[in-house]
Image (cartoon, rainbow, N blue to C red):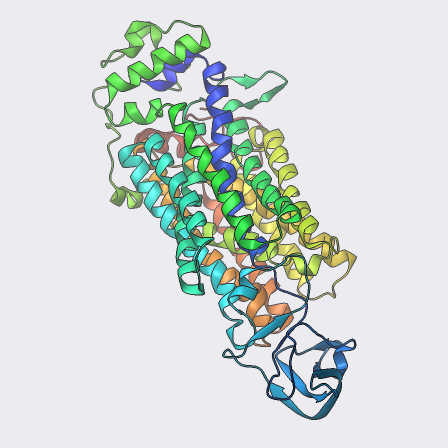
Length: 563
């Protein structure tokens, strides 16, 4: 049974495929919600202080009218809110924060009680867990632990969905994502909170990884979009599956306007995520996966239901376990029916280092973390871009900037090819980051960083699709999952390189963008040696992959590969 031949009669983008593609947008959006969850629930107050009850009666509410009267100043007209001058005592014994003794600066420590000035939220986990001053290191650790969860989810859901199927593991991913986030909303202290952030992160990665793979596997590469005749449906779905991720990031940012209590914001959004589990009742298993794992009876049932939905009739011989009849084979010979001497496509995880794919695997093990470091590193620079004074609106805009990059990919990927776009989506932001590292913040800096974010978003999307097209069906999700696991090393390091170490004076300001830019350039140069997969069906075996290597188009040509 050959799914590409079945698609010749079933159709690549009928009502059946459209319905599945739209349903898969729901779990894909959960990844975006969780990516920015901590940014919304962990907003840091602009001003705070520790209680000074040793000096006077502290009402736990008052702040100085002039910061310089109470806080020691540091460079660039900023103040050190972790230190204070002793306030004078009013007649009634209360503190006067604008009349202080500046001869000695006292330091706050983690055992002190803290008072927080009004800010964008009523509270956040920063204020509830007092993640300030000598506990400030725990703030970037929240995102790093979330990345560890993404890493576990990349590997776990990649391997398990190849073993147990896409549909069932998607349900598990949704339950992990929503359940972990929901439990985290009720945790009383920091360590249990970050534990459930890891659980939510693992599920969130599965909520994107599995829909991405499934959306590519239900279509082929021959039929074109009617109003974009050079774009295949495979390209359309593989790129548009990232749109709900950006929408999810925008939605959680918008909810921050309406819900100002961080725990309420988190449990409300988590319940909405949990409701997405209902799609399990409406989506089928991937026919391509069922065929590749020998579950032919189930695959036949899925295809028969799909044919009814698409209002077509699929020939019975195409649904048989044996080879299709000779006349059913494609005339151009590009997609061959299964032959007795051909590999059976049953591979194990160790085959990621098969000679046919070893260099591809190693190259992707470098490019994935580079792209992740670039994407999250630039995203964490939102405070430097200064798009607006509204933190929620800034996050919404920076999230929505990603969508034009996905549209750009749809319009160009089937003309230019995967490889050129993959290479330049790393080289261009590499160059912009290297330039931005050595100029002052301003309009040019903002433009360079936004160009970098545009390209990094495109690179992120190309990476998933390109990787999926370079590995045989039986290890495809495992390959994407393990590459995504490697990517999380870049994600784990991003908050430390981009924010924490420079803010502590551990690194000069130019180092972060130099690391981002230099890494991206290295990744782009390595990608020059990969084959282009444009015009080829998804490989089922290493023989198919070798055919792609031999006949992939040169990087500088715009026409489709000659197969």
